[in-house]
Length: 293
Length: 79
Image (tube, rainbow over all chains, first blue to last red):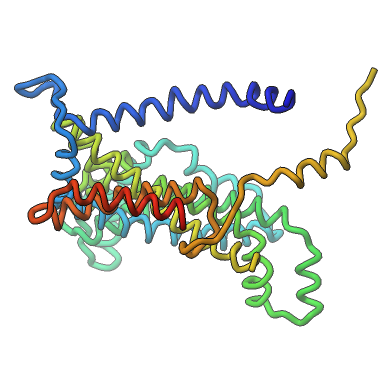
């Protein structure tokens, strides 16, 4: 009983911080989502309107389109980052000259602020002054203009995200790979397993928790990406890169429609949690059940 | 005076404290009560949004409230 009290006492600061910075703002957003509130509109006061914001949301084609674009973005970005991150982690496991230097350089994008990443990529991609359109034009005769080409704008946001966040995946998977015991690998080699079998039956199951944690973190990040994309494409051309975070930003800041923006945020949180939970069920819970039965 | 901790006793105690009773209902995974409440709330929201989008013009939303709560209770009770 006494140890319980000490446990709660030690947990108290964390719970207090979580409550103040997590639960209370969420409840406030939920409260605002049930109101019509535009402080700069004709009526600047909050007016309760029940579920009308959510009702408006399910008929909002821009929102539904941005969900589709965001899911596509998150799928391509996270999948590419995990695959590329794994290969880079495997590369860093080997000894080669300049490994330390290469590892440091590879980690540098992580320390750059997203807004800076977006502006640098914007500078590199701007048709008249950017190096990439210039090189593509002179080498391949390809005219890159992300202000006109929706597919290319989408692809570039994905590539930018991969460039920025693959090092995080690499570091996580590298830490997981380094901490693996050698015995199962030696055992598998003695048993005559080939490289693919060792990867599939030994390495992958052992680093699964690390992969899952990384995928969760990256998925949540990808679903709420704003600043990089805002700097690179501004959500355009048209609505081709208007992802959910950017969509909410446009509702809340330029339009100052706080009630509707809050409702959108709540639904985005809902979607994120559902996706993470489904992923958890698919990869962990069902497997645990199989093992238990 | 130093306190010696009987590690075996601590382990035994830890083994007797099960985090929460788990069971298998009609949901395709092993769940505890928190999982079922979680699934219930998520299905509640999904059903409400679906109803608003496709059915509210012909059937009032209060019908959805009743159905969604009943589904939530069923999931928590039998899921």
